[in-house]
Image (cartoon, rainbow, N blue to C red; front, side, top):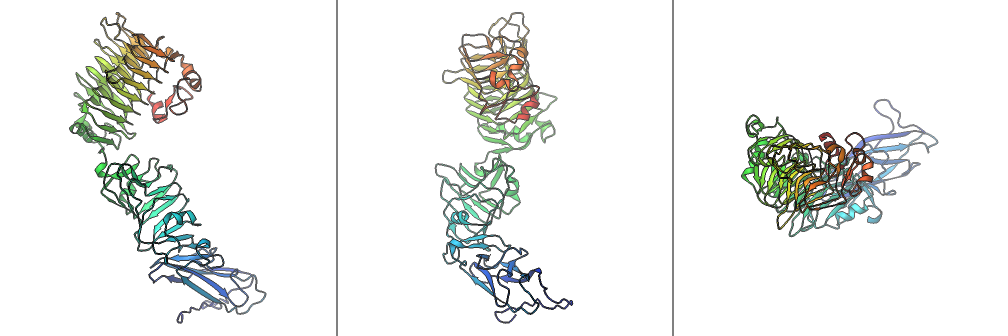
Length: 606
């Protein structure tokens, strides 16, 4: 090399070679290296001139990508930010030569802050030979001053961003795109309050080296929203900082469908979160607004010390989980039911092997003392027994409660107001839930149901059971003379309350000689409303929806097993919404399943 010139000799070699031959093609990888030692991003390309070979026969290429011609005729260039370097190879095709002889060619290498051909026609490439675009707040440095503009216009797979704060919301909808901070840069995307910073809707996207800033005033904001992706998609988030105010409504990463490993994003990929963050339920959020996370039985037991708190179950619990023998005491009175009035999100997890043996209210939650929301929780293989107001999930409500997308399996036994999921719903709403529980009311038992024991109204609000079902057997050993106190496939007593779009299939049996009432859906429907619901007349042994009470029963019908199974269900259970709520099942136990709960979970429970 001499001055600003470098000589490349492809003639003879020390190893005895005689140079390149005729009618041949050669690729020489990594012949020399170019490094940007300046202070701005540059574009590098080359032209050959002289003799018989031209740009179609000989060219430089980045790395080992011999198909990438670094010449401004095709506007294919190398993009180098400050400090970056690239190895350059040489491609030679001698098929145009008719005789041997020296070819003295001159290659002109150009490094410029402007792309050849102008911004509209440019197709720059990064050091590994893929198309790139450069974004900068300085118009003398990059092609674009907007990240979104670069994403919309880039022909390839890389957008390099120079330092600065970009007050825009960015959507990445180009498959395979890498959004990357330029060498040594830490650009920040700060779209303003109540606005998402980055939304990704394309597969195989990488985000590397950015800062994000979000805030809320009266709305919501997400730093990286991946909700438009599926679990088969892939996104990488590395070396990125997330800044928020730590307010309700702020989410660092929202990934409900599992496109990324949230734990890895939180802990293993060089990302930083301020304030600190936690990952759960398909999202990473500031710890200041996160619920209290429940990982074992000790955590579950501690719920009772913050009855108005916000909790989330983040792992399955069973008899092998830490704290079981201390908290559940399976050889004694079992788990002590919790008094509660907050929010509890099961996140699709399961609490298994719950044992309760109490004299009074019994259930995971003995009583809900105030407005409460319980969602997406499974209870499996429960063994719950108590006195009055007994259910696998809940003994009783004293205020409006919302229970959704939850279920129970196992056995429940009590004296009165006994249900597979809830003992006494007074008032509250159960939706998109089910129970496959063997339910038994003992000798003083009144109001025994497969899902709810007693569904009672208050002057201000009703109890509502909607889009739910029960498949467990219901037995009432009541020996009194109250005709209205019996057993129902779904609800024991529906007193001034509502049952809608639900069904029951378990056997219903009352053993008393005093003949208390029984029914396929409810034993008693005093001033209640039952509509759009069904029961299996063969398996329940019941011919009436409710045997006593003066409530209304509309568009509800007892059907044969075959009429409720498989594709026949959609025809015969015509009041059900098979587009959004229910799915038919082919095969044994082919009763409809809920869209809101995993199908196999429901089939395994039967």
